Image 1 (tube, rainbow, N blue to C red):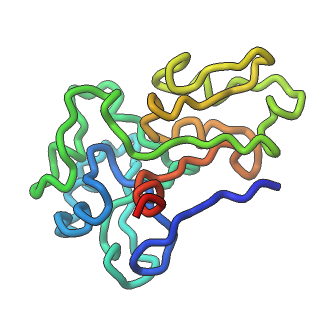
Image 2: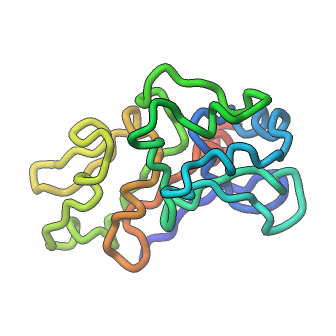
Image 3: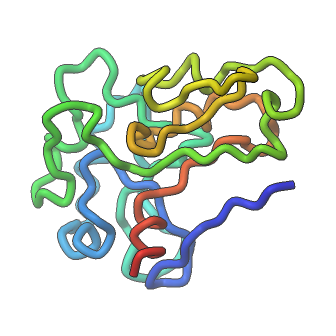
Length: 180
Protein backbone atom coordinates (compact mmCIF):
# COMPACT_ATOMS: atom_id res chain seq x y z
CA UNK A 1 0.00 0.00 0.00
CA UNK A 2 1.14 3.54 -0.73
CA UNK A 3 2.00 5.79 2.17
CA UNK A 4 0.78 9.36 2.43
CA UNK A 5 3.73 11.67 2.86
CA UNK A 6 3.04 14.26 5.54
CA UNK A 7 5.37 17.06 6.46
CA UNK A 8 6.26 17.69 10.09
CA UNK A 9 5.69 21.18 11.42
CA UNK A 10 6.97 23.11 14.44
CA UNK A 11 5.07 21.13 17.09
CA UNK A 12 5.95 17.73 15.68
CA UNK A 13 2.58 16.89 14.10
CA UNK A 14 1.55 16.42 10.49
CA UNK A 15 0.71 19.46 8.41
CA UNK A 16 -2.89 20.56 8.55
CA UNK A 17 -5.20 21.38 5.68
CA UNK A 18 -6.12 25.00 6.33
CA UNK A 19 -9.30 26.88 5.34
CA UNK A 20 -9.55 28.76 2.05
CA UNK A 21 -7.48 31.93 1.90
CA UNK A 22 -5.08 30.86 4.65
CA UNK A 23 -1.74 32.61 4.62
CA UNK A 24 1.39 30.42 4.31
CA UNK A 25 1.72 28.38 7.51
CA UNK A 26 4.25 30.51 9.45
CA UNK A 27 2.32 33.72 8.71
CA UNK A 28 -0.99 31.97 9.38
CA UNK A 29 0.19 30.81 12.80
CA UNK A 30 1.36 34.34 13.60
CA UNK A 31 -1.86 36.02 12.40
CA UNK A 32 -4.49 33.56 13.68
CA UNK A 33 -5.69 34.58 17.16
CA UNK A 34 -7.50 31.25 17.68
CA UNK A 35 -10.85 32.99 18.15
CA UNK A 36 -12.90 30.29 16.38
CA UNK A 37 -14.97 32.82 14.45
CA UNK A 38 -14.18 31.07 11.14
CA UNK A 39 -15.38 27.76 12.60
CA UNK A 40 -18.61 29.36 13.84
CA UNK A 41 -19.16 31.05 10.46
CA UNK A 42 -18.81 27.81 8.49
CA UNK A 43 -22.33 26.93 7.34
CA UNK A 44 -23.80 24.21 9.60
CA UNK A 45 -24.85 22.10 6.63
CA UNK A 46 -21.15 21.73 5.79
CA UNK A 47 -19.49 21.84 9.24
CA UNK A 48 -16.12 21.76 7.52
CA UNK A 49 -13.84 23.56 9.94
CA UNK A 50 -12.52 22.00 13.14
CA UNK A 51 -10.29 23.34 15.89
CA UNK A 52 -6.92 21.65 16.36
CA UNK A 53 -6.75 20.38 19.94
CA UNK A 54 -4.77 17.16 19.51
CA UNK A 55 -1.68 18.43 21.33
CA UNK A 56 -0.37 21.69 22.73
CA UNK A 57 1.88 23.72 20.49
CA UNK A 58 1.86 26.56 18.00
CA UNK A 59 -1.10 25.07 16.11
CA UNK A 60 -3.31 24.49 19.16
CA UNK A 61 -6.69 26.20 18.67
CA UNK A 62 -6.23 26.86 14.93
CA UNK A 63 -8.80 25.86 12.30
CA UNK A 64 -8.26 22.94 9.95
CA UNK A 65 -10.16 20.78 7.45
CA UNK A 66 -10.40 16.98 7.66
CA UNK A 67 -11.01 16.39 3.97
CA UNK A 68 -11.71 12.67 4.29
CA UNK A 69 -14.70 13.34 6.55
CA UNK A 70 -15.75 16.97 5.98
CA UNK A 71 -14.22 18.55 2.86
CA UNK A 72 -14.48 22.24 2.07
CA UNK A 73 -17.54 22.76 -0.08
CA UNK A 74 -16.45 26.33 -0.83
CA UNK A 75 -19.67 27.69 0.72
CA UNK A 76 -21.68 26.34 -2.21
CA UNK A 77 -24.86 28.39 -2.71
CA UNK A 78 -23.49 31.31 -0.67
CA UNK A 79 -22.21 34.57 -2.15
CA UNK A 80 -18.97 34.52 -0.15
CA UNK A 81 -16.61 32.25 1.71
CA UNK A 82 -17.99 32.57 5.22
CA UNK A 83 -14.75 31.68 7.03
CA UNK A 84 -12.81 34.42 5.26
CA UNK A 85 -15.52 37.00 5.95
CA UNK A 86 -15.47 36.09 9.66
CA UNK A 87 -11.69 36.24 10.13
CA UNK A 88 -10.83 39.40 12.12
CA UNK A 89 -7.08 39.30 11.46
CA UNK A 90 -6.69 38.44 7.76
CA UNK A 91 -5.10 35.09 8.62
CA UNK A 92 -7.64 34.03 6.00
CA UNK A 93 -7.22 36.48 3.12
CA UNK A 94 -9.95 37.27 0.58
CA UNK A 95 -9.76 35.62 -2.82
CA UNK A 96 -11.10 37.15 -6.03
CA UNK A 97 -12.31 33.81 -7.39
CA UNK A 98 -12.38 30.18 -6.26
CA UNK A 99 -9.62 29.17 -8.67
CA UNK A 100 -7.17 31.29 -6.63
CA UNK A 101 -7.59 29.15 -3.50
CA UNK A 102 -4.58 27.00 -2.62
CA UNK A 103 -5.44 24.89 0.43
CA UNK A 104 -3.33 22.01 -0.85
CA UNK A 105 -3.02 19.55 -3.70
CA UNK A 106 -4.65 16.18 -4.23
CA UNK A 107 -2.23 13.32 -4.84
CA UNK A 108 -3.31 10.03 -6.44
CA UNK A 109 -2.05 6.84 -4.82
CA UNK A 110 -1.87 4.57 -7.86
CA UNK A 111 -1.56 1.45 -5.75
CA UNK A 112 -4.96 2.11 -4.16
CA UNK A 113 -6.83 3.96 -6.91
CA UNK A 114 -9.47 1.76 -8.49
CA UNK A 115 -8.96 3.27 -11.94
CA UNK A 116 -5.26 2.38 -11.84
CA UNK A 117 -6.21 -1.15 -10.89
CA UNK A 118 -8.61 -1.94 -13.72
CA UNK A 119 -11.90 -0.78 -12.16
CA UNK A 120 -13.92 2.01 -13.73
CA UNK A 121 -14.21 4.83 -11.21
CA UNK A 122 -14.73 8.52 -11.78
CA UNK A 123 -15.81 9.61 -8.29
CA UNK A 124 -13.04 12.18 -7.85
CA UNK A 125 -13.63 13.73 -11.27
CA UNK A 126 -17.41 13.92 -10.83
CA UNK A 127 -17.22 15.84 -7.55
CA UNK A 128 -14.29 18.11 -8.41
CA UNK A 129 -15.38 21.76 -8.65
CA UNK A 130 -13.05 22.05 -11.67
CA UNK A 131 -13.35 18.78 -13.64
CA UNK A 132 -11.14 18.64 -16.74
CA UNK A 133 -9.04 21.39 -15.18
CA UNK A 134 -7.92 20.11 -11.76
CA UNK A 135 -8.62 16.44 -12.47
CA UNK A 136 -8.33 15.08 -15.99
CA UNK A 137 -8.19 11.60 -17.44
CA UNK A 138 -5.24 10.03 -19.19
CA UNK A 139 -5.60 7.91 -22.35
CA UNK A 140 -6.65 4.90 -20.21
CA UNK A 141 -9.34 6.91 -18.34
CA UNK A 142 -7.32 7.10 -15.14
CA UNK A 143 -7.47 10.33 -13.13
CA UNK A 144 -4.55 12.74 -13.22
CA UNK A 145 -4.32 15.74 -10.88
CA UNK A 146 -3.22 19.00 -12.48
CA UNK A 147 -1.35 20.56 -9.56
CA UNK A 148 -1.59 24.13 -10.84
CA UNK A 149 -5.39 23.90 -11.01
CA UNK A 150 -6.10 21.87 -7.86
CA UNK A 151 -7.28 24.08 -5.00
CA UNK A 152 -7.09 21.33 -2.35
CA UNK A 153 -10.73 21.48 -1.19
CA UNK A 154 -10.73 17.74 -0.45
CA UNK A 155 -13.98 16.88 -2.20
CA UNK A 156 -12.16 14.18 -4.17
CA UNK A 157 -10.73 12.67 -0.96
CA UNK A 158 -14.20 12.62 0.58
CA UNK A 159 -15.81 11.03 -2.49
CA UNK A 160 -13.12 8.37 -2.97
CA UNK A 161 -14.73 4.93 -2.47
CA UNK A 162 -11.61 3.08 -1.35
CA UNK A 163 -11.42 2.39 2.40
CA UNK A 164 -8.07 4.13 2.69
CA UNK A 165 -8.31 7.13 0.42
CA UNK A 166 -6.71 6.85 -2.99
CA UNK A 167 -6.52 10.62 -3.37
CA UNK A 168 -5.40 12.33 -0.17
CA UNK A 169 -4.85 16.07 -0.17
CA UNK A 170 -1.36 17.24 0.66
CA UNK A 171 -1.84 20.47 2.63
CA UNK A 172 -0.21 23.62 1.33
CA UNK A 173 1.70 23.69 4.63
CA UNK A 174 3.37 20.40 3.64
CA UNK A 175 4.60 21.94 0.41
CA UNK A 176 5.83 24.97 2.38
CA UNK A 177 7.78 22.66 4.70
CA UNK A 178 9.40 20.84 1.77
CA UNK A 179 10.75 24.09 0.35
CA UNK A 180 12.23 25.39 3.61
